[in-house]
Image 1: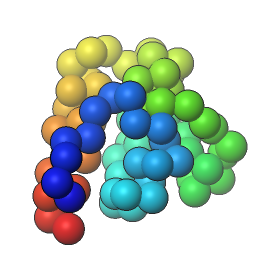
Image 2 (image 1 turned 180 degrees about the vertical axis):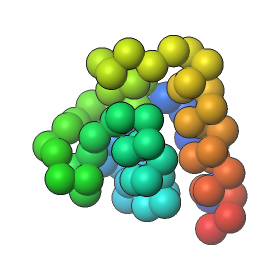
Image 3 (image 1 turned 90 degrees about the horizontal axis):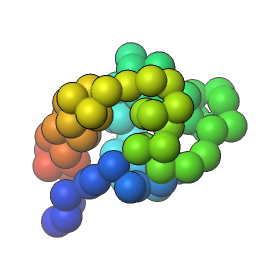
Length: 71
């Protein structure tokens, strides 16, 4: 992957581009359509919805971008 994923990526796009992110999203309590829940919107919106801090979001983005670079 050539570009860095940021918090404004839509959940459905994120799991399409980085399928390994599903387990990570579940770990932090963020549901996604592939996880069995019809949740839409951006990673940022959903992180805030479940009460994650900015620091948590930064950790998630770091891990997601690490996964993306391994492709």
